[in-house]
Length: 159
Image (cartoon, rainbow, N blue to C red):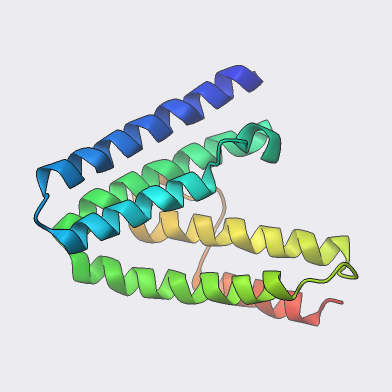
């Protein structure tokens, strides 16, 4: 099961990277698009690093596949309406930056409950990306900016 699931993640990852590379190759003079697509490749590799099998439980794999597919769909749709994509990106960026501040502020005294809540918000943001960029992939649970804000407030109340 572990090998089968990890192979599926790697296949989807490979397809997404190849598709993005193809878009970059087909538009060599568009440096802004190239930078955007390269940033998406970085996102994919950050989400699924080489040691992902050690980092994640196998239950996470179907979600990783959805997140990778959402990034690939975003790469294609942004080509059609870059302004719309960037408006959504600014919203995600603001949430991600808030999460990073919280992660950077975690100390060794932080409770396991707080650490788990921070990790949960990371995955909530990934689900939110699916809801914004690739609705047809469906989210694993109901998600909205309001729910993420509520989770941030909860984390801020924790020790």
